[in-house]
Image (tube, rainbow, N blue to C red; front, side, top):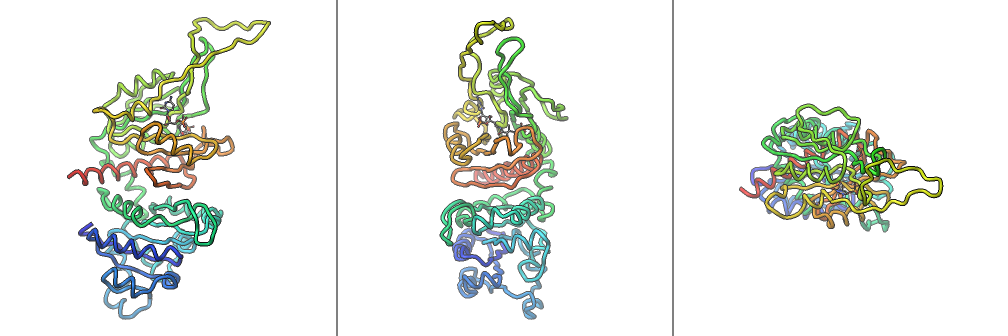
Length: 420
Ligand code: PMT
């Protein structure tokens, strides 16, 4: 971070005290840090402690004649490689989502032409309130990046989602953003995530999508409600970033996307064979809803309906494609991502799958019928990487795919830089 400039905006929440540690960590990594302390933020931390740690004056007032003459709020935004808002309160997020600019912080945010990262922190009910949900979606769509929030005990005594992410985890996210090959302004950031057609150039991405059909006899099969939309949009987003893409698809109604090598399969066993056959790959993303079981014997002829009793069918477990791809070995992709389709205890169950399957990330989604995730146009996912749990708002599946592939591209370039 040696030659990077971070503009940190400290909002008015109890978590503001943690940003002092963030400043210290950023400085330790060699970044230059300028801080805007909002009026609310100054209720929790003092300009003196901020300035001491940042090694620079603390900016507070839009109408400070001296500052305006010397630097100016536009220059404050322009000089930054990244703007970080921590804690991002419900109020600050609402102002950002609506383009308000009535103080130094919001004016700089509106004038920003670099990426913006926010670390939300608020009471769980405020975080889940419909107004905040709308603002979150708007901010996501504007290309604003999110760090957290985390789940846990709140200063107000309640428990839930809304705790500001720990400074080291915010630092990790900052590191990933600064290591992106191309950094653009917030309005363009999402575009940068998918229209920059070279970010995954030279990479091979393997995607599984759709359901599998497990024959019972020549005319009947076991299946599920996956439409393939989420997997196909991921394959398209990877292609749009310049990757060579192999899409192993179960039976769907979707059109074959252009510029993607597609392998159509029917059963889990065929899907496994096609996926393993497509290796080596740099990244594997298993979005397919693979049937966990198949019937234990072949029925070459249609099972006859008997007047006495229905036939009893035995089941055997299908091979696990995600688990196979995640196994250590020379052909293991650098990054293996699974999905977890749950109807209860989303995060706990997804975490268990992350561990059991041995993949690197897991994208959890609620597939209870009321959510419309299976077959629908939208998806609300929670991305779990190690201890980090990042809940995204409900987005169009294409947006989920673009965002996910943007994160994948960031991670790969960060890994590359670390290896250099
Ligand atoms: O296709 P859509 O209608 O757009 O819906 C999208 C989706 C809900 C199907 C998708 O977002 C999703 O959640 N895909 C994973 C569905 C699933 O089978 O989840 P699971 O929790 O049962 O499996 C966990 C992971 O293991 C998945 O990555 C799955 O692909 C993989 N798996 C499971 C069983 C198996 N035998 N082999 C596998 O590879």
